[in-house]
Image (cartoon, rainbow, N blue to C red; front, side, top):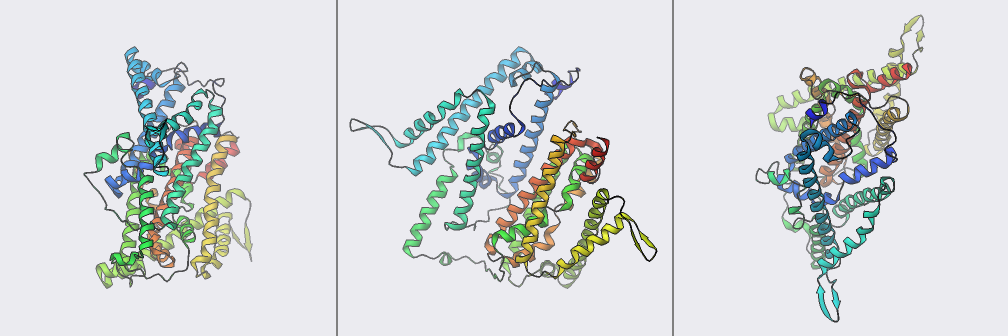
Length: 520
């Protein structure tokens, strides 16, 4: 596909008369195509390959994203290419068009069958006694009835030939996907299912299943919502019989003395992970190229797993209250001293970096600010560094994580606003997304990896967050939400910034925005 695109030497042309769907509506259609009902089987895929298999999921998503960009490049290079079979014809001739058409329609046919089976399984679990009787005789059983019912409900949508109209259906599908995810979390949180399973790090035997996790062969027998329904019913039976979960013999001892709720602990965790380093992520990907996103996912997965190991250490021994305590348990007094020195040095250097970042960005907003104290002139960036330090200083007296969570929530909102502002600048301020970038830059890969590693440096804070939590059993879920949100934010900012400025992006994306606005 890459060769087919590169062989076209005509300039890139964009036909502005083709589509009528707006950016947001096209985004809804794209999200609905990706966030399908297959989300119900992802837990089964993870159970086959276990925690480390998430790396495969991230690698596959990166590879498919890149091939999607190649499809876009092909269609920009030749306006005559309107469909996927058109790309096959451009690459391999008439036989390529025929083969691609057959496989594409076969795939869509099998996907439609898989969707109907999934919907029928879920409806049948809700209505197990549903039968269609004709003159007193059972003609169609409940599962088959649900399949026919789902097909009849979906049938009218095949006549929608306007993607603008279809975007409203897509938006509904996205809402449904979010509701499904929320319902599962609610069942784990409030319906007695809990989050008590730890799994294993890796399962080689289940690896092939993880690789083909969207293969519909497994969907009918691995329906996650059906199993969840059965688990909830089983818990209800246990409750009626008076069986307490503590009688199951769990050996983990939780010494919870914290008062911070699940959501407040989550805000603190997200604020710790998704920091101001988000502004340097576009520079990191510009240093390493598109494929440097793979090390980002690997680093995120590795640090998430080590975070789970910290939780496991603190679960196993209630006397472990801090990160140096873990060092003491593993290596004795020397380990405690070494880790204490490393942690405090890390936190000191991070604070210095934050102050420099804040000073640089504020100086770009107010370049003429200078401070004179008794004839001593302090330049703009240094003035802002001192000012920011004075503003942040009162926060060190906050010794309750519950109170700190409100500041963390403000920080999380600020990250979202930064991401939205950069996206807005690319869409409406004339910057655009015209840079293609490079696939990989080996010389800049170490720089990219070091910046990615800096994004996940929060392990020294995890014991504090764990101790502050009122429900330490759910701390692994707190870590999961924090890592997913921060990684999604980092990847989004990296892709947006790299498409906007390419290799010309500066060490902080906000500095590039300032330069582009001056040029405009």
